Amino acid sequence: MAKGYKDLTLEQRYIIKAHLDTNQSNKFIAESLGVSESTISRETKRCGERKKYTPLRA
Image (cartoon, rainbow, N blue to C red; front, side, top):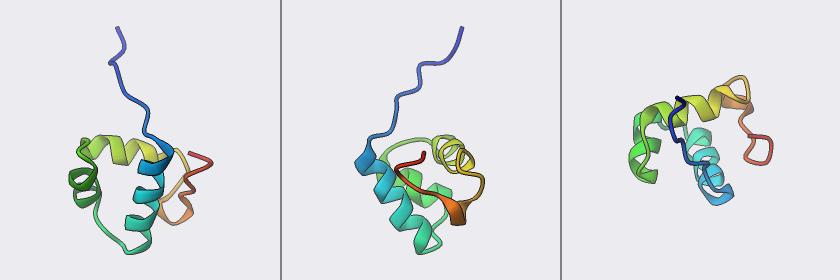
């Protein structure tokens, strides 16, 4: 049975992008959004790498 992941909102994705642009860690980003560090890791891997993260493409 698959885990019940919640989708991030577009607003949360823009916040992730802003934090990535200032080289914040996944842990910092996760704590600021109230989600797990693995959520941030999965989200950024979806775009290939942290530098290429785009909220609209994620």
